Each structure stands twice: as structure tokens, then as C-alpha cells.
Length: 409
Image (cartoon, rainbow, N blue to C red):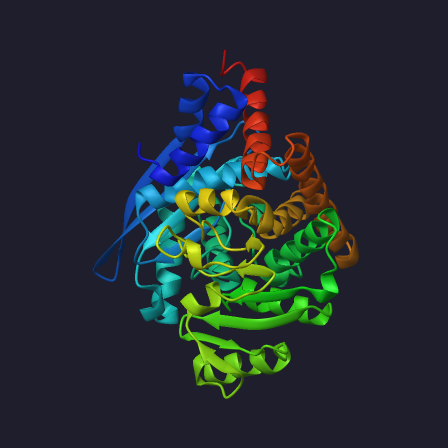
């Protein structure tokens, strides 16, 4: 089985820190189950996967992405990252991921529904509320989850809303699921500023990526009184030294679909945004945005990984040697999976809990995860990165569960 080289590199650092054995490392690198299928829909074939990386802590948990670049190696790597994320924040889940190789932007609603239902037809035997619970990811949403739930229940002949999360509220979904990743990110931003003794009101922020997570965190930062001086989407970015009116920027995005088409601020490229002299850079776009070839241009003192894998290992090490603090993705963007846990838990028990209670629970889980991570970082006298601290905590919890089950000597 293949795992992305980046994941192997990062686990090698955890191995050195914790003194892991070959057996322990091999267990972490080897998925528990790899399912690969070809979805036949309207005469076309779409490669698809569902991969369970680890289930020592509980059933698998992870999204399903629809994208033309999806490969087995990518899905496997993301499943491993989900294992670490779920472990770090203390959820009773293992890690899993799914994907379909398809040009999602070109799909009609009807074809999207057919592919969504075909996915469940193909993988129904390896998913379920106590086996492996999917959720939305790139180019999938609550409507896709609703179709998948319906197809699963048609096949099984029973209601099982907890088999999938990220559903519409009417089907048992978490009310604030859409903004949960950003809300979790805001919790981490507040914890970070407090832990490092920063004045949050005087910090400047740049947000790369203006999809769901980027839009919401820019809005939350603005509403908190922080100065967001730049934002960007795939078309480019806008910069205003005195701070952007994020409400106005959101309206431009909704009306024109691309930030570059708006008449606000100075137009900049995504690369120029990454190089701005800001206090905090929030990465909410795609993977591998800061690399060996552009890392030296980064001037921010703090970087928040709201996206998955936006910094390569080589670039990560360079930032660490320059004392740039990077809050890793498995901590910074865990709000989404915590919301999924709360949805799953409600569905399993049949309880209906107030939104305020759920929101506070999400904040408490993430605050506790930050404190554990920052605690180990300080215990090691800041000689390790926050990423290494987070991964070490996550790995130890997984391996402890494996030992207790008798799977690991």
C-alpha cells in the first residue's frame, strides 16, 4: 500500500521523538482496509475508493471528495491524517476517507445524484454508524449526504441517520455544520493569541482561500475586531492595508463568484498574498501552497493551516528554523469533524440538544486539544514544532489503543 511521501517524512520525525519501533511505524503506515471500485453511471466509469486507515479508537470517520485528481494514494494519505486528527482531539473515531475521480464542476445535479447513489451501492458493505461514517469533503455537500443516506436506507431497509454526517438539519444534521471548521479555527486562533501573549485586536490577518472555511473565518475574524487586510480565491486576491470590509467582500463573492471581479482594494495574486507582511497567515485553500520554492517569501509570524496539507514538509522545517509558528491542520481544522461527532452522537442516541450546548461542546473539545498540544510544545522548551507535538499526542493515543486490544506487542 502506498502512502504519500510527505506523510512518511512527518511520521519519521514522530518516530524519532517517541522512539517508535518498526512494528509501530508499519502499523501506522498500513491501512486496515482498502476498497477500490469502479462506478458505472450512464455509460461512463468513475474510479472510487473508501479506505479505513485505523479503527483502534472507534469506527472510521472521514469525508468523501469528488475531484478529477483523486487517487488511491491521496485517499490513503487523507485517511491517515483523519486518524491523527480524530485521535488528537479525543474523539471515539478512527480515520477513514473516500473519493471519486470525477470532474465534479461539470456534473449536472441529476448526474451528481446518480454518482452519489452509485457510491453507496458500491461501498454499502464497509460503511455504517458503527463501522465507518462518511461526511462531506471537496465538491460534496449536505445534499450529496442526503442522497447517500437515502440510498443506504433503501438498501438496508432501515433508518440509520448516524451512518453519515454533514446532512441537512431536516435529516438529523448539525445546525452549524457549514461554519464548524471556521468556528473551530477561531477557537484555535483565540487560544494561540492567549498562549503566546499576543494582543488579538492589534494583529493583521491574510486569508488564502475564500471557500466555505476561508469565508467564514474571515467573517469571524472581522466581527471579532481583527484586521483582515487580504483575502483570495482561485481567481486572485484583494488587499487593503487599512483592513477589508469582509461583509462587502462576501457580497462580491456571492454576486460575481470571483473576488478578482470586484472593485475593492488592490488586486494581488495568491503568491503575493502568501508573501504579505502580516502577523497571521490563514491557509484555507488547497494542498502544497507553501513549498520549498516560495517559503522564503513568507513573512507572517504565525500560520494557521485551515486547509489540509497546505505546507510541504521541507517548507515546514524551514519555517520552524525561522521561528515561524505553524498551527497544524489536524488541530486547526478539526472543528468540522468535532461537529460530525456531535451530529453522529445525537443520531445514535435520538437526543435533540440545543445549538448553544453543541457549540460550547465543540469549543471545549478544541480548547482542550490546543492545551494538550501547547503543553507538550512548552514541555519540550519549544524545541519541537506544534505539528510534531500534535502528531506525537495523536500517535501515542492510537498505539495505546492498539496495545490494549492486543494488536501490538
